[in-house]
Amino acid sequence: MRKYIYILIMCLAPVVASAQNQAAIIEKINKISAEMKTMECDFVQTKHLKMLNDKMVSNGKMYYQQTNKLRWEYVTPYAYTFILNDNKVMLKNQKRTDVIDVNQNKMFKEIARMMMNSIVGKCLSDEKAFKTTIKETPNEWVATLIPQKKDMKQMWTKLILHFDRTKNIVAQVEMHEKTGDYTVIDLKNTKTNKTIDQKQFSVN
Amino acid sequence: MNRILFIMLWLLVGTSVIKAQDMEPEDTVSRYSVQIDIRNAYISGVCIMRREPQQVTASIVNEFGVSALTYRYDRAKQKVKILSIMKKMDRWYVKRMLRKDLRVVMQQLLNGDEATEDRSVTYENKKYKIKYNYTPLTNEVKE
Image 1 (cartoon, each protein chain N blue to C red):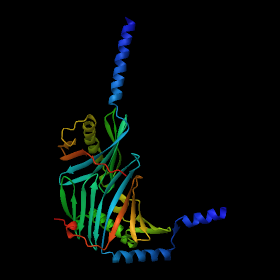
Image 2 (tube, chains in turn brown, green):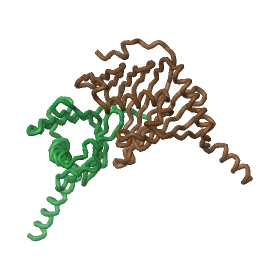
Image 3 (cartoon, rainbow over the protein chains, first blue to last red):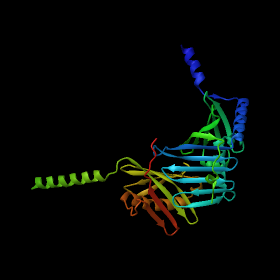
Image 4 (cartoon, chains in turn brown, cyan):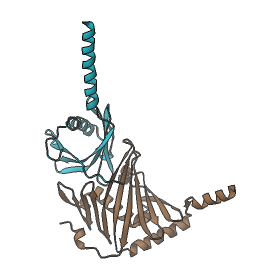
């Protein structure tokens, strides 16, 4: 009986991929992300606050188009839109709209790059920015990314990307902070390679 | 006479305790949309506030969920203590200014000094030209 339980546990437990296997997984994800011309989905973002023993849930819609277009829009409980279109970023809340040149703002450049690369999984092969380890479960690949750059280290201790193995897409992103707070973003109703109205990426 | 005085005193004390209990906030969590305008820049996000009888703990996070600031307001001492702050803002003069400004903001919020239709509270630090705005979030997302 014990033997069967042990076998069952071994089957269910995430397995750390070997270096060779990890490289193969990253290559596969890179290939998929290269083929992904567009992506759109709904998202649910849950911020867990350790000090308050509480969480904050917000949701919205996301649109991505290769190579440098992203719309990240919060719908509830607040309205906030972040649009990246090449080198321009538009930030819009209920009170004001700002357009920023990412080349003039290093922090925004990092955030925009991190968001884009996390969504499509490109950040796995960014060795300068992250130290990556990948675990395999029957349903997903779980990539843990430890930031290596100073700016990123100040914000996050680690990022965890969950890839749906059947759909070959990112299904969940976790962002962990030094304080013990963390944010989980669940991507739902994902559609890939559908035509997206270019108005979604307008920064004017 | 003594007995009457005692009964009156007891009634008065009893009434004031009941009133204090009525006013005493329970352990509740409220959420605000926050914007802090600093000359040519601004910080926006959400403030999650846990109100307890002795203190209020609040955390300001930006829209993407990155924590900017966590502080605690002591109701009795009417003082703000910064518990954590993002690295870029972690300077003694920034924290001193925030402690002073947030003390006023918290007093306004807890006293219900919201004069506007949307029940928002605004405070301006005229010396450094910094404006704080807290607006209650109403359409909370249910999981």
